[in-house]
Length: 305
Length: 266
Image (cartoon, rainbow over the protein chains, first blue to last red):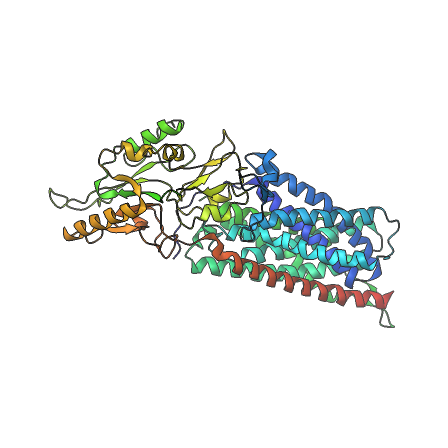
């Protein structure tokens, strides 16, 4: 059984919001790339929405991280070693915060270029250069890292709960993809009248992501149980948080259940895609708030008992 | 290069006078805290940015026991401090490299380099490091680095009236600790043990202890639980990678499946 005598770092509201928004920024960029690579041409409008949002979100992420520092003006110490006699770049691959700082910086560059690409183009036609596709693919890999490393930051500690489970990184990336899919499914409706098929695709993807998230929650609980620390999650008030998180899966699971509702014409062509429950305002908000609560519960339950 | 120095804290002779706490506060100009009235004589509570030394009072006297002269269970007292681990968890995770090893092999936080991210607090298994709201950076015992440079004994060891806290080179302290252990065992104290004397705990501790009971009784992780944060690096990233890969695959299936449908309808 694990024993902990550590003190909490008091990572609270700014870090919770950072973990949440970094997930949506990374997840949105990844989904946009996937829509470009594998979707139909009319998914391009939604891909552009995602690329448009990823950059501002990542800027907010940087601001949140900086605000949380005790010495915000020293944010650059994350990248530059100012130790007398050892001045140079700070890069510690074994420290997830160090690795994540660089990932955030590099992803900002990828998100910025993609942002410029979509805001300088007119129309929604998919006329993307090969170089930009490669750029998007590399950016997506970094985006997935950004969405997941925050969980590894927690695991690589000696805090109860966090250090007792190595499933948090996986849990965060699955939930980030789910929140991003819900966010984009909802946002796509404001961009194009022809967004219903895209919304349906994202709704289905969200259903799959939530299923993966559910599996990762089970893995998280099993690892905590093995360490004898499950009681921290089942105690009040955190158990209420977990109930709310599970409840937030309902719109996604309803969408997944209704995926066969696409209507077909007599010739066999689909004439209407089903409305994704997560694409409705209420559905999307429930899914997204559920992901925020997940971050909140995982971060706070380890620090406050 | 100076020889590695350390503290040997013999808890069997600690009388809980807190002279070490006072001396540490005076030398390091740490602010006094409003006293806390805890369960015992402990008014300090825990180690943090204002308390680099903390005398723990561990009450092992059972409430219902029939205690008479000669069979009572004693309280345990221990002057706790940063352990100056050979393999330090705080130093491992610190992203700014503000936490360094000095020429004396002690662990030191450079206040002008730290930016207050507090990752070290989440990593220190002993709950040693605290965040200072006034300075915006973290701090802990410096091993009186300034006194070491002037060939002076650290303030706490200098003030300890019972020699519970002994300062010296680690080689000498190990010999003293071994001798004291042998003496206690000869007297029948079978529970007595050295903590951090060997490398079973974080590669050995610069500040090691003679304990009169199990480490966990004193709030110290035992050898099985004394692990570095990096133990979760590979498993954490692997879990995230597999989940991300499955997620991308699931997204591909969803997008391709419905994409085919809609293209058929176009």
